[in-house]
Length: 370
Image (cartoon, rainbow, N blue to C red; front, side, top):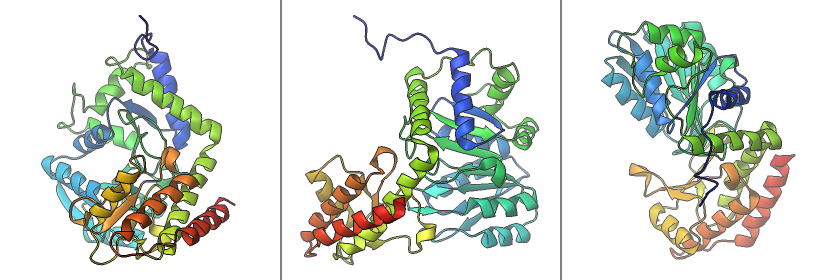
């Protein structure tokens, strides 16, 4: 008995290469693009292990949990690491990055997360890229959460390694990712004797055995269903229009930031400055004495489909995430999410004005969409 998701013809090298071209078009990049066969942590670790080594010094910008992970990998590679950590409710500034580079002229690698979905902040990559480019360091950007939700221009911004994943704003599969690689980055990798080779982490393998050979033979059997899903996801973005997709995410973020305090039950944006808030997810601070994980659990018990989560680690007790990305960047999802949170907060003695919040959400969405 045949099954449409199982009985598929093998994915050809030409089809694989066409998907890479679609990713490159989404990023407006002329750099090489490698589609990697795994969740985005695969190319992120591959980039770090290819670009860092003993004797190198890395500036690792920490605006959330992923920045902490990058620092661990960099140290494991033997690099000296300068951590630039800022409070998770803010963004890092180009001035802060420039000051760190001036104080440590030996820095030759910079790692940064564009948007931290876990904490709800986003960083000014265009301005930071100018500073890093002037210094001459290799610049790696984690754009997994930002791609599709806000402008992302690795070539124009001087990003040497731009890693994306499809599972958030792109509304695609989680099991496949991609990275754009500059000529400078390829040269850095090739000169690093510790860079992974003949390894699943190796980006050089893709360069030497796939790109340089004319993209005629794949290194291994691709994750076929994920690749087809990525292709369909890119087609959907092209059809809606990248600008329209970003506009939808911006409207969802603005409506959530405005609607949460309009409930009148003590919810407030965790990231205080709107310009520093990520369009992919809005984080909210719960009222004093109210456990965020309990509020989220109650809201999800009423409707498990809502894109809600409590903060991770130490933030689990005070932060709520509204993950309005991909298909959830929609007005009805924002309305339902905040209504559920307002109802859940009622169990803690906070009365929510659902009608007023609904009005504010609707008006804000309309204003942000125009």
